[in-house]
Image 1 (cartoon, rainbow, N blue to C red):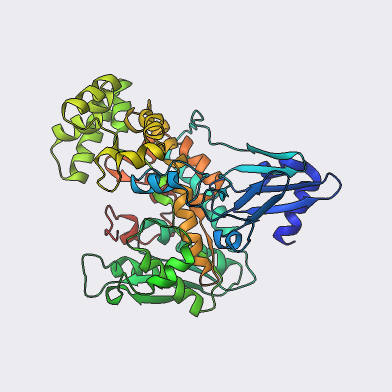
Image 2 (cartoon, rainbow, N blue to C red; image 1 turned 30 degrees about the horizontal axis):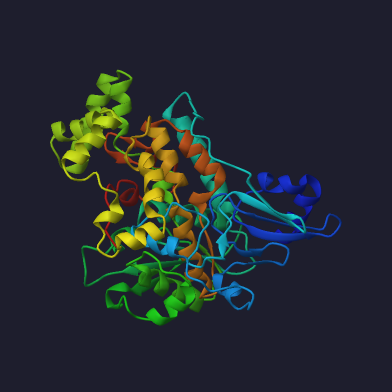
Length: 464
């Protein structure tokens, strides 16, 4: 059954509620002739892009790329100054606007119904920041993670074309490769193509030690890109043409080169470790949760572990991640004003004139988000939920999708699997960060497939 057939059957059974029952990455539109209705939906995290232009009573046009709408003479090309201002701050919380006034994004986890009478948009799914999972042992948490993660990889291996995976040597991409090759071997499939950026002449960025530890396990066809020989300005004109909009990504040239390598090797589906950092996110501030709940022994152990990880004194760690988050928001705001940091970020930006900021509505938009920026989360789980739902997530996915599309690739992200994200958000904090060790549940759950060198990593190179 093709994806299109699956969506049609889901719509026939559940109607406009069908996106609630779908898993994976999708952006689709279908025409219901009987009802005279165009129905569209976008996946839970915005992996697949969906842009549209709507002129009441005259036109509804949609595309997976902005350039697909700009070819229509009916679509104005007026610059959206609000988006320009947001970009310069940067302030990327708005999940709908684009750099064009009359081209809009359908937000993640939203559906839209279009009829002659008008347009109706609503959200069909949301992460639950209150949900909590409690199991009897670390082993049970590890088993649950392994089961769902394995399924997240398995369902993304389905393809009529060769499948590849990015492999940086980090925990996220290595986990995907190790699970994927095991599944392919069990199903009698071929080798998994892997694509890695290496830096022989820049050792502080070179991850070959970890990449080769994964490759040594067999079942992969490795491909390497000499990233230290690349110029950030190489192919810049083609990158800008592919992207349609300004972007934030100083290292985008690396992704461009890796995408080209994958396309040159006839790969059409590429697995990627984005956004493992966020899915298994846990800030050290969960130390404040331990203090708040009176778990003094656990807090002491965590302070020692974090002090070792950050190479800082225990007292500094205790203040920064344990005591400071407990300071009331009003006191924090007063302290920021006293220290001259209370101004909205756009006021300190020399690129933004006050007149332009006012015209673009920056003061009101900035004020509306001030609570999110400066009010500490009430718990580590709420903080994790914030990280998963910020506007930068779909923004980055859209940038990555356009790079992949330039080389005929379909990116797939196991760490963006709805089931996996729901599990990780609901896990206790100590399953994500414990004694200075990050991604604890992943390290335990995939201990049987990850090389020891990779599993025991605590730091990674900075390629930004």
